[in-house]
Length: 113
Length: 111
Image (tube, rainbow over all chains, first blue to last red; front, side, top):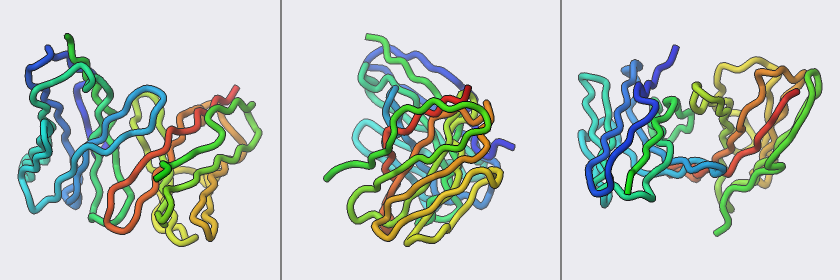
């Protein structure tokens, strides 16, 4: 049973436009969420996180939104750049400070120049 | 500060064999987690070690085991390899209340 789902395996966006990556979860006990970016032949790199007490967290071009009632989070990248082309994974855990992260299957983002 | 290192980077084994993968965490990090990445399945949590003790465990068969040494280095062992064990195995380390930092992974191919 996939507790964290990324239903879009791929996404293409023009450079300069907004990229929106979506993630849904089923476990209501999850209270800490993260986004990782992965380039080929490299391990995932942490991007941004959010705890369940917030509904938005911003870091430069990256913003994560959390809708607890819908069990949905999204990552917005504005403006998108060609270097953002990578696979993006969302992850969730039941308590911050523990490291049993449950990952989604990833969304491959392609930013077109 | 050096990142997480994993050895070997690539490995080819045959069915029935066993394999040991190694992970050296970032200096000062005491938590080490292991994940398996396969196409279509994303990253699946195997286990987490902290101060030489397994603290969390995912839903993998007993053929998958691990350990952590006093210097926080960790090893993962898979016995009686199956074709379906072919995957990228990722190790991540973290310090208290910090996020996880991943290594580049070990690509295991089982023939």
